[in-house]
Amino acid sequence: MRAVPGLKADMSAAEACRLVAQMFRARGLETPELDARVLVGHALKIDRKRLAAGGDRLLDAREVDAITARAARRLSGEPVARIVGRKEFWSLDLRIDPAVLVPRPETETVVEAVLALFDEATRSRPLRLLDIGTGSGALLLALVEELPNALGVGVDLSAAAVAVAHDNAERLGLARRCAFAVGNGGRALSGPFDVIVSNPPYIRSKDIPSLAAEVRDHDPALALDGGPDGLDGYRTIALDAFRLLAPGGYLVVELGLGQDVEVATLLTRTGLTFAALRKDLNGAPRALTMRHASGAPDSL
Image 1: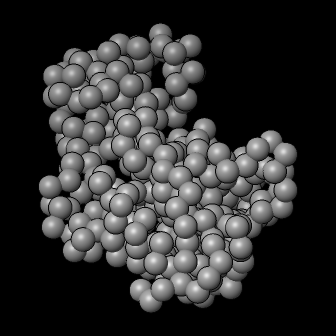
Image 2 (image 1 turned 180 degrees about the horizontal axis):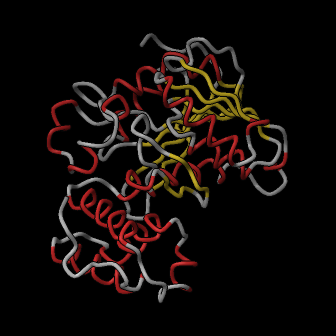
């Protein structure tokens, strides 16, 4: 376990943060101060507000060991969210574990795209939501939080991921409006749903070895690998999307970079029509919205 230079017992928590951040900065981490505050707070079992208010408290030897262990994990390339087992998404505090992706800011674009479909009046009407590949439940829980009369279903191939999503719903007080199940896409469901969302695996298999180590070595392969062309997850969604959507309903999917035309073309063949394409904060097309249209779908 790599020691933090200068870190010792009877040192203040504020000084510990400074030393950990200094080490992180020297190793080229992007957010050394933030990472240090989160990890020191986690080691001391206090949140960042209490850490800031009590920065003059002195550390004991056990706390020094706890900080050192977390700093070593971060320097090995493990994401902060993995170390603390938590990640904020859409202002929701979500528990995560190795079975699920770390929710990312760009995925909030999907939430924004769904909410843009409704005005203040229609947001309060009863809605049925489906999240395919729910993982931690991030998308579904954010939407149920925002849509007060919505009911949601989340499905995932991983039973361990479904357990995490259910636990998050319980902790956030949303379990009465959500159900979670193990399944492959929407095959075992009957619908109809007003909105279907998904952040499917969309990385091409051959590109996975070149991903950043924080993703490649710590996110579950099941949630990353989209097959040879990165589109296998969208094909699974396309098999049932038309059948599961209510007339006038919407499908909103997250996109990998440069996939907007291919995915829209694939989904158009199911009988859905293009509705909108929303960019993330970096200007990349990220959330594709398709609408249920009349007529029989073409063969996939």
